[in-house]
Image (cartoon, rainbow, N blue to C red; front, top):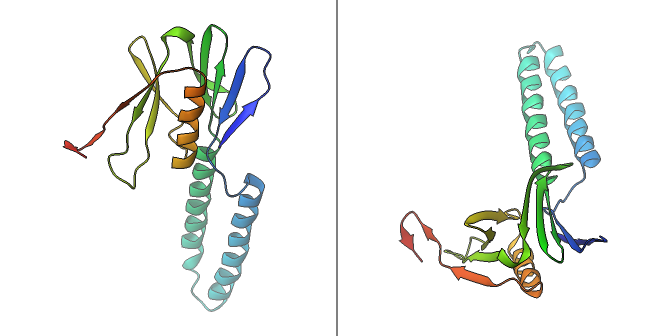
Length: 169
């Protein structure tokens, strides 16, 4: 998802993955699974199959860890600030964890075209020989919107074909 933010230093955009469920709702889903599993495990334990208790606990821990990991990946974001003379790219979760600051005239956009219809285009910002992938989590429609946005900011887009395992499509 691409969201424009207000900024006094220039134009700022926040790029985030599409999220279908919020963290509190995800916790409620997991607690529902805990309640349902507890009822089933209690019934089976009363029937004499007490060995299901540790396996049910392990299952709930594994499902909870998977949900947490997925939710954490969905909370990442990238913020691009287009100033008059600088371009600032910040990547992170709750705060910037990585930061690139480039002179605006040296920034180029590199677009790796889709090698297969199932794959998306890969967008990179390039400056001084450094190539930084941009918003790998965007869906194809948002990725095209990002390229249009970068072109509207005056950055030249260079397209190149991408290969998979040495096969060029």
